[in-house]
Image 1 (cartoon, helix red, strand yellow):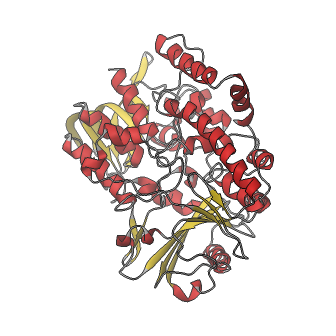
Image 2: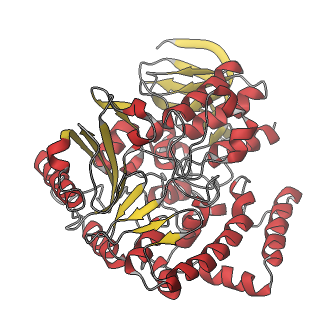
Image 3: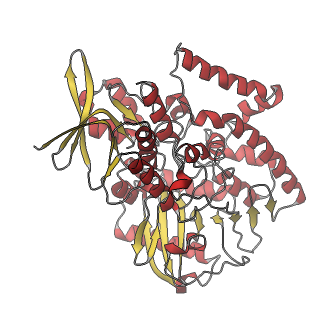
Length: 519
């Protein structure tokens, strides 16, 4: 076994965007930082890769709520990151009666629904603005009497009071509503209901009737620059990852590729344990004052730490975390721009989900381990916004297919993947009839593929479900919800921590603040 002697202040496991955000904050404060990445690309699910010669894309194909505060704090614009214009969201209709939702308006619906949308948006914006500061704060530990924690609770209470009695009551009611109830209360148009419920469901194991945190997930997404609308930055998602890397390098931090971590080293005796560093797959041992994991909680604790170093009740809680991924990814390399019926230029996020029942039925298939019979999805043509993603004159289509189970009955055989791929392409072709003739190459990634390629348990976007019992001061679980863990010297900074997943950066930001505040 080889031993590297240099001592780092921090070793960060994983160069996903949260690991890079955490590293950037720590490095800018003069801390020595080493980020270890298993693959040859940085960014995790936001890593841009060539899936066919000349065609590049990331699993996360757009931004919707990356924190403007992080952009400002880290001066990311000075390192080449420039946010893109918000995209419209287009609910596709087979008869061409599409519904188009922009940041402030909706088209293709009755005047009544258009007016209702204005009122609905104003109310949700008030709620989102109330919650926004708390996505970038450490949630207090339940029962804590520390002044800092009591202050955070007091701030949240004040924000609620400032809503006024009527809106405060409405927030408490709406926050836990199923998406179906919220949509039925406000709108008549079935397609509009499905489109607006999408952002509370994408990436999760929930459907419109699920009585959980779908509305909170919508409010979380609305915390970004464009009120939750999708956008592609200039230079693509890769520009964000490159900018974060440059901040780290400029501040003296290090990022090391091809360095899979085999275990987190823990030492100690009956007086207590301490994380002392990591061991790489090749046997190299690296030591540090802190180990910070951006890997998902199950991988961090059950695989890298090992249950022998954990209290049984804690390891049981981690084992019970719901982390089955439900999103597959389709990439199509096209020899030209596809034509969608009723759309001049398909420049936006397009959703195929004719009504909320379509989403519910696809969910029903998945919860029994089956592929959806009628797939629902969001898709876009990122090459319209970033020409570098495809050869000149060519385009690519990127789609997120919801309710594709990680564990398929009979397993994800080559035939099962091929059948789903053909079904998804057939579904898209109903709206773009000439699509098949334009396909040069197709790639389908199931949640199982995403788990294997990105080392994330279950292939789950958010590492664990964004649900009421796995959010805020309970994310991922008691004793690990404030970024520190039961093992001194070991911290979390990934999507399994508050506030959650998606390209937002909050977990990395919050973990760094917690660590720096605890010095």
